[in-house]
Length: 445
Image (cartoon, rainbow, N blue to C red; front, side, top):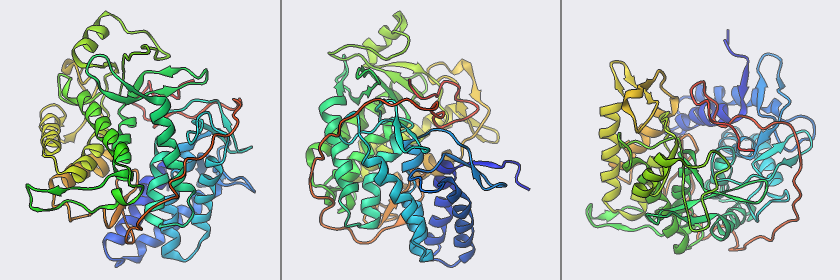
């Protein structure tokens, strides 16, 4: 008997559905039970779409087959395409893909606060946005991630996915991109309901460098290995070297949050000071924060590390894209830090404060420690032809899906026009990446 009856559509899709389908493919489809179980899971999750609603509710009661009526986020509703389209391709039932793709089409066509950058919150009951908060962090992150990844995995002729992603990146460069003082660290700020820039960052948002590199890189020769690291998918997608260079700068800035702490491990959230201010929407920086910022170009706002992967995920893409051995060195440094500070007699745990070891460990090990952190580290040190980005697309839980040969180009190199936007109210937004340990992770208001 299931001890839990209500399941997150997003988390169950990326972890369970994605894991089952990836295992089915990686085992050369030898075990049909994996596909059968994936179908069982999706058939339950499909009850999240009610009537003619384009957007799914965020959770479903598996006993009653009924959703929890509540607000959702663009990440929660828009991070399903890789898994559900893969299920369709193996079952021949296009309904799965249609549900997930339809949700993204709906979100991409909503009026948005900035071109290509929709508000973080959505209301599945009426299909409208909630608020006007824009971020590449939690609650929005993997919606942007999957726009370009779905284009690559499916080789769709529908330009909406690549063009919307390209527009989101273009808007981010024009409006969100900032440089820290001191340090000249490049980051993507948030944009709040009042249309103010919030100079904040997070471990979750640090996926963005890798996503930009994947979407736009031209991949290089690894002279140290003597073989091509990649003709991999990236550079063939939009062919824009400017944006991959920004992606590499974002990777450097996120690594700096690791290199600057007592443990060599990055914090959950942090803030910056830039030429246009230091507004975060939260408590202003204190004397200790300003001292830390003067040394490192950012300051810590929540020092917990709950075994998140995003910095090392981006580091993996940067290594595959450039062949620069500094990314190997960074991965090795992270391994040494994890061994020194996170190891317990029974495994590895999170840590309550990456800059104060005395605060102890978190009595928990997250599943994404295995699915993502260890996998991205392993693949960083492995032969790049193993799980090549020419042949696979990773879902947001790092489960690889087999991809067809890449197209010469994705999208039509079109920046989409803005759509008139008015802030709409709605139900309270869900917690971001909820865990019993990350008490501070709540959607910004």
